[in-house]
Image 1 (cartoon, rainbow, N blue to C red):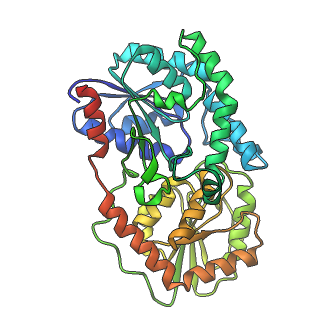
Image 2 (image 1 turned 135 degrees about the vertical axis):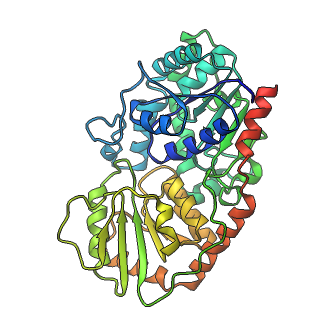
Image 3 (image 1 turned 120 degrees about the vertical axis):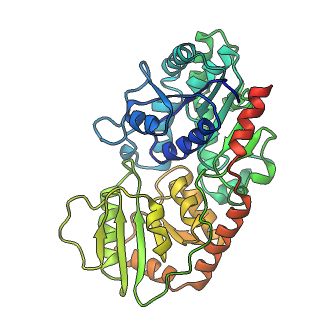
Length: 406
């Protein structure tokens, strides 16, 4: 890309930050100047990746590390539909004008020649169109819109994500067109047309995991989760004592404390198994079963080589990284694509989904069943081998270089 500066508009949604910064760091390593426009909460991580940072000044003052500063407050949602409404009103469309002004200001200050944005930041996409800059939409998930192959009942069988996301876009269209009018852009007939105006849509997923991959629009490109796969798959841990990794969300999820309570109680019911809770989810608990141990925030890859099973909330990064190491999983979903990830694991034979409000006895039974299933371990390892074949560390660089050349 030469000296053409890329401005990236990033929302701190938890797991998406790490994946995005891996991509941007790889672009910077090849000589691309990168400025990240985002919440103040990611400033240190952006600078540690060797990138320049500029904050949102008019957009929401959001920091998901604290309930007091978390703008989304997804724990308030009593259903996936309610969670979708919060995302629509508080990130995607509600602050679109403010985020567009932030993006216009940042683009001028850093003299951006290219622009990219999270797929939730419609305000930044409006700004890119207003400036006439080549721009890219980044989706840290499976493709969320209907396609020829994945629509209607088939999409519904995959999980609620496509339906809910399409409805979010339809309900957000009036606010999007209001924002476009502020910047003298013509109205759209559907909100997804905003994506169609981009030069490319980049998805941080492997094609084999996304049911829609064979029928996505021509502008859609898969680049994988930006995590380097292990050079060789570790041998299954085996041994008389099994190890279960529990990695929950870095942002507050609905009824997270209740889920942690249930998981701790379930762990006490599973014999010959050690449970490692990552990310400080156990807080200061002292009344833990003998087979439960709490860790702070450590890289998941440090523990995955030793894992017989991973329990997580269905965040897309955790889903991809667990499978890269050939570890089967149980997902406890609460909203959006988490349900789709659980369903896809079941289709691939590499895991399953369990309701977050399940009794500890039910969770313990699911854990024991997964630990004793050679088929699930084999299926997860097959996913890892397939992902390895699909891994292309320079996929993102080629996409952005092509835009720069044009």
